[in-house]
Amino acid sequence: MKTFSATPADIDKKWVVIDAEGVVLGRLASIIAMRLRGKHKPSFTPHMDCGDNVIVINADKVQLTGKKRADKIHYWHTGFPGGIKNRTAGQILEGEYPERLLTLAVKRMLPGNRLSRQQMTNLRVYAGAEHPHEAQSPEVLDVKSMNKKNSREG
Image (cartoon, rainbow, N blue to C red; front, side, top):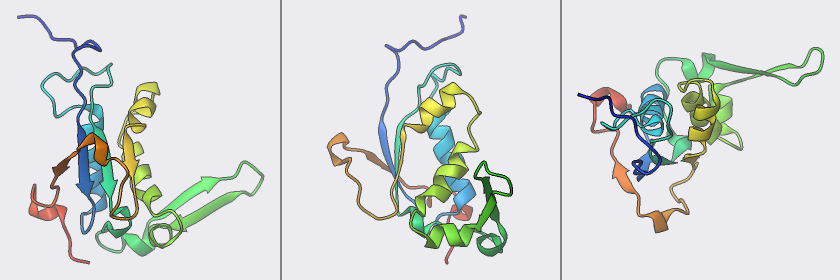
């Protein structure tokens, strides 16, 4: 019995589209991170980019449990003295780029290395219901039906 290690010729990337409307943010982000890394495949190799290309639509309609919409604060620093800034998750979702909340959640679920930065380029997040990737004929992944806890009425 030999250990299988995928080579670039063995990698088969698929396109998957996920509708985020009414889905809990953390559960959705963990499913997307698993798909991007390729851990759902039996040919998973930790040092290769063997994950799928993931398209997420309706990212502005993602749900947060509890009081996270008002209490969860995202911080960043401008680089200048006293330049710490913050926004709540609700402000980000109601702002100009609501897809950033989901992108950041997925990014933080991946390891912090060069490979994960390469895998993040396979993620495309759109706030609306339209996406320009119909030519790739993506298959639909229904996250709501995987587990009853994945969806939440908002």
